[in-house]
Image: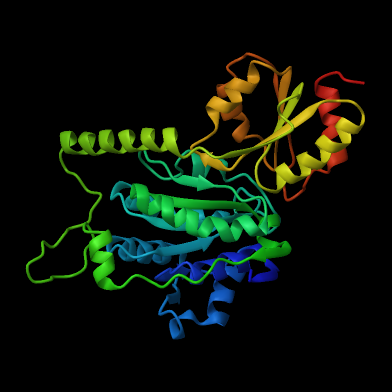
Length: 360
């Protein structure tokens, strides 16, 4: 029987983490994602599954605890919101440079600076483009429902361990705070230390007789060594781009125009699409599920058959740059965004669409 619950997106993250056999969570409270850690504390999984849940003294401490747990081959994660993710960027870069798997959750709020606790999508640059230093990438999943918040926990860990690379769930504050029905995953036992050694032979598990002790680092003092590391990373990223692109299309087959949006913005665009089609305007919706790797090829394919795209974001326009690169001038790419925690309505989106494409 399916285990159906009514809960917030943040709560779904926490329950899914326990059920998928996570070894540890290290975090620090910040609105609008604090329910992730609060739910984990309420559930007390250290008593049932053995999962460690710890409120660190800061975001910097939390991400470095994740670094240590990941170096041991453990399924570890953290969560935060936009300013907190900014503080974690150095540690995220270290983890990516050391080629370690982990899961990071970012429930976005408005900025820059302390900004607002209202929802935003303005962390696209600092996540998809690799907000820390160096040429690295994060596998980035963008949920559009509470169900996907739960589903993407296991998927994020799966991809992280498949490629020895950090994964991020990039959710806007609406998805984190909204309540929906969700089917929680079945319980999966945590791996034993022996299973971890077998599945992650590179892990630093302490000195075991007859085994090599591995040193985990992202440091390389010689330029040639560092370049070789970067070349290896770029080759891995190319494999990810070829194999892990995920997206959803709604009514794109016969569309004359296409909305491109992610997260809750895609849900609003889907409502706008339905209203426009009722007026006889053929609009489709393309929702990138992986913001990286980005569905560049699919957008380029659609650009050959439509009259134009309109990108909708809760920001001044960040993902729109990648859409324009994919379209490569084949058709117009317009943009509509709201900031400061404001969210566009479907009526507003239709009005702006008609204005930008001169449709009466």
